[in-house]
Image 1 (tube, one colour):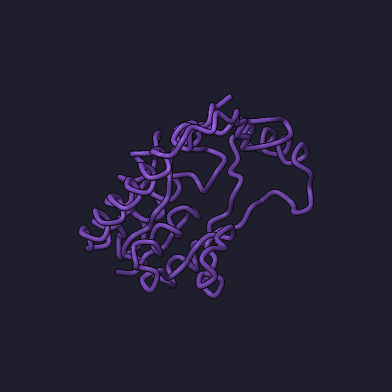
Image 2 (tube, one colour):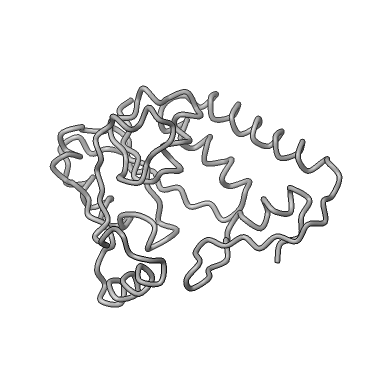
Length: 195
């Protein structure tokens, strides 16, 4: 199965599933595991490098306010690597190439690759995405094993004594954005109090 990952979390999940050899291309943000560094990059940010967090936030607001994308997708490279499966997300408009753009491009490709969108709202949905990725890649049993292992690992942490630590999980510093979706569950599972 030839897989193109358009989000770093999917790249890491594909590797965790033991399917890293199936990856044919990744995003400009993918840096783990180190094996992905040699893969073709399908995306790039339109926001200049070297800006501070506040400047980046202002630029994001400016571009999204005009309905413009924050990312460019290399359609020629995507066609060249010719994936059978493209993994992306539709959960966050500023986190990756637009799902609608990816879907439209896939429909124009002669091979018509499957587009799998990962949109978890909670921790168990993150684990469930392991099953979805593995099933789409033709290895459902790998997904079930990894999901079960991840659940076991969270339970092992959760069984420990409560630290009663108070945790403020920030996703962005200027302006401050709280980590959402599954982040509060992760903090609670570690025995801490999410602020």
